[in-house]
Image (cartoon, rainbow, N blue to C red):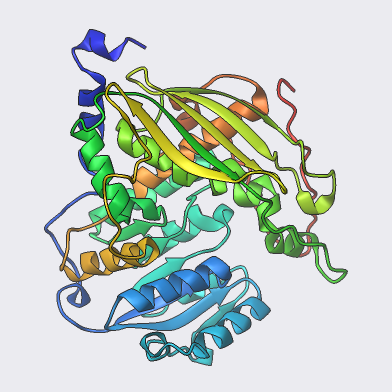
Length: 415
């Protein structure tokens, strides 16, 4: 790939040209509920901790909304979350929940049943493996969407999600992904100033998500293979994407935002130093180190790990010709970003703010993480084109509680 400056572009010009906006602004609107104060009906797909948290953020930030439907693979998860939310003592939340038994759906097809109802908006918070198919179905059903990140666990899923996001744009469906830093005022203002030259031309960047071990559940005797995989979803590559995809996407997304788009290539390493070889820890690596190179020649150093009893580092940093920034030091927060992203979504739906569809940007950041994993797993350099065009699909084509889903072997680079 030719150097950017040979093409007459500085690094700063590349960043500005590649990321003129973090989401699209359109003027067209569709649907009565977008242009008046009618109550918008919300359905939650995925009743875990993040799903419940997203609903609370949404209800706290918006008026004229009502949670009316729930869907989850497991009945106990749905029932527990329903009871928890209905007992919420905050009046601003409690009055916005009205879920009847008829609007509760359980099973692998629960999302389809919820999408067949008259909900206006879905909040999607299942494990990442399910996201491409569920979001495609939601767009086909004409629903506005908030979906958690990452948006897929493999390149095939990323491309399916991108097609759905583009179709949502064609249908003027508002679409917000859970990369909440894109809505956090301190980040928004700082990134804008960086692009305006506040630290000169960006020369290099580094991003870390070094944290402690997430949950790892023991198998219960009554659980089938599939039930165990889904209840222990953070510990299989096919269900979560590994830690670089599930969590580190947040930091990689900031780098892509500042540098104007995804990287050109990556060389990575990783392994499993802390996690014991037990089924509950699945087939994940527990650390990744990546050297991403962007089209303008800027390098990004990326580190992510899950080790207990070690220092936690979660941050982003860019170095320019005249200074450094932690990417949120030139702005001030005015609202919880987890709430603000839902406020932005509903302003978009009602026409009170710019139309938002950030699905493609989130898909690109997800694939940035996936290509880092691909490089670490194989020991090979991986280009953006190789990752985007890869036929890698790691999610089982047929999910059934009657089938076996053994934990895959832990990747060995070069093998």
